[in-house]
Image 1: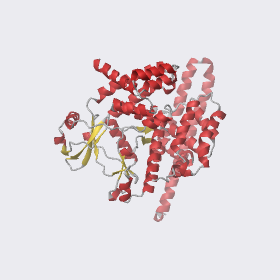
Image 2: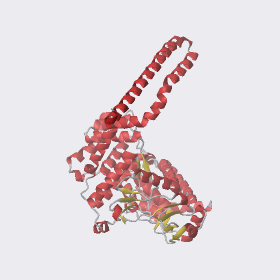
Image 3: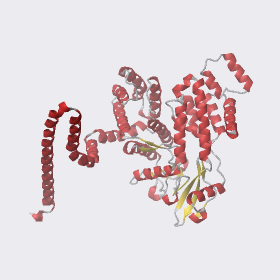
Image 4: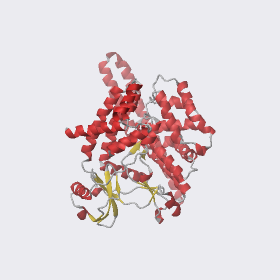
Amino acid sequence: MILKFLRLFKILRVATRYGLDEIVISGLNVPRTARLIDRVVFWRDISAPRGVRLRMALEELGPIFVKFGQVLSTRRDLMPPDIADELAALQDRVPPFDSDLAIAQITLALGAHPNELFASFDRVPVASASIAQVHFAVLRDGKEVAVKVQRPGMKKAVDEDVALMGVAANLVERLWPESRRLKPREVVGEFDKYLHDELDLMREASNASQLRRNFSNSTLLMVPEMYWDYCSSSVIVMERMHGIPVSQTERLVAAGVDMKKLSSDGVEIFFTQVFRDGFFHADMHPGNILVSIAPDSFGRYIALDFGIMGTLNDYDKDYLSQNFLAFFRRDYKRVAEAHIESGWAPKSTRVDELEAAVRACCEPIFDRPLKDISFGQILLRLFQTSRRFNVEVQPQLVLLQKTLLNIEGLGRQLDPELDLWKTAKPYLERWMGEQVGWRGMLERFKAEAPRYAQILPQLPRLVHQALEKSADTHEHDRALVHILQAELRRTNRLLAFVAGIVGVTAVTVLAIQVYLHFPGWQ
């Protein structure tokens, strides 16, 4: 209890030193004289912008608060732009923990000392973050691996700090009515779930395995293989990847990497993950991306760190496809209708008003050179519009927006002339043609055919049983039930007839194929 009190006292002291209480006071009806007294009493300089002060306070409070700031930076639908931009600059710079602790953690998690598990183990970590650090090693069979080890005591520290964040969020919501729009308790709850997911390294390993399977035949992206015999919730062992960090553009150019192709490949990888798989790497900042210069995989991206992944279901992808199609056609009315039909905008929203707001956001981009168009800024302005119309922004789309901003920034770093719109549009049009056209319908029918084949023969029987049950409770409906049952018997005979026709047709087609391919059988 004493330790919790001391931790809370430190949080309040740091918040006061950086004038974070001033941000709250500015939202209250507090006289200017009281604000001046507040500054003099606590002897502090709050001339720096509020976003800068918030970032510095989070860095001083430690790695879990840094993580919280990073998550807040993704909620541009809730955060003011100046704060979101500043929090996006937060870096996970954490000193490594003692190698003896890492070895003890590995021994506990995998049941053997690293000297027994590996042919060699490098005690000096190559990377360190708030949740875990990474050591290089070599397996007994000679394979080079990276060993990710969770920091000892992380769960306890996370639980305690998140609990204090919850108390602070509740306090802010009570004192500052305007903060309710920012949903502080909801944001802390989202962070709690996100952080506990990241604490389970087996979850990260399974994410990597899924992404690797999705790109198994790709010539654009490489994902390390997970060695499951050496994986647990606190330690995972994966294939060691060799490459140049994507941020080191001078080295990439010197190695002969085609920067324009690398930039456009990054866009295609992103949209492939989103629209083909509905499963995307949601933390694609430069620190998590390498570029291979090995002869057999030259110029291919290498993805690392799979703790944060985004998912989109068919409904999300359908919503996005409708919106993109409408954007390409400048059909802003359809964009507004899609938001209301999906339930993300209140049913009472006037279509014409939302249409006008979306037009104001998007129309200017069509009157500027394509290379000057920013997808990220379009999304940001749409999020700002969404606040005005009380549009409920889905968490998975917030992750998508965050990732798109990362991709756009990375692409422009690699190729300043990158035209994200022009690069993405053909891919999106092709994907939407496959999804909403005849080809998409046939693919969906093929995917659902086994289920239809199982359900259709049972359908008459199930309807028959439902009708009998209905007749038991409604005596006066029995005559109608008898008529419907007779119709069902005729339907059964019709289904049998159709099945026979299909069978005969299949046999005929097979005979024709045999005849054409083996003319000697004539």
